[in-house]
Image (cartoon, rainbow, N blue to C red; front, side):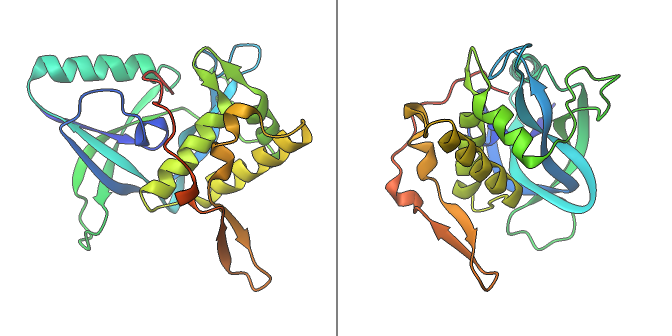
Length: 230
C-alpha cells in the first residue's frame, strides 16, 4: 500500500512525518481560503486562529506539495495517525487529482491523493468559520495565538513557503500585507515577527504591473518549525 497526501498549508514547509517522495504541483478546481478555526495550536477556543482549507472553485488551481509514503503498513499507519492528530480540525479526507509542476500532460501525475478539507457549514462543522472581510480576518490573525505559536507566523511562513516553491498565492500575499498593516496599527511588528515582515511584498504599480519589494535574499533562515502544526 502507498498513499499520497496533498499539503497546501503548513505541510508545504513542515510535513513533520517521514516521507519517501515530495513533488511540487497543484490540484484543480480548488482554492486556498482561511476559513477554518484552529483552537489548539495557534489559537484558543476563546480566540481561534484562522488556518487554511480548500474551497471548491471551478477553474481555480491550488499549488502545494504532494508527499508519498511507502514502505509497509506500519510506516503508513504511523504517518496517517500523525496526520489525523495534526489535522484534527478537518472533518474530511477528500481524494484529489494531483498535477506535477512542469508536466505538460493533461493527465494527473497521481490520482486519489488525500487532502484534508473541511465541510463549509457552521452547523455540521464546529471548526468552520466561513469567510469574513479581509480587514476582519487580518485583525484576527494578527492577534490570535496558542500553545504552538501565533497565527500571524503561520500566515507569514506560508507566504514564504509559496515563494520558495516558486508559486506565490496572491490571496495569501494580500492577507499577509493586511496583517502587517494591523500589526503596525497595534504598535509595530512584534520582535518575533520582524524576520517574517521582510518577506517579498507584491505591490501594484501605476501601470498595473506587479513589483517585488524586500528581496527574500535579505532574510536569514527561520528557526526550525514546530513539528505539530495545523
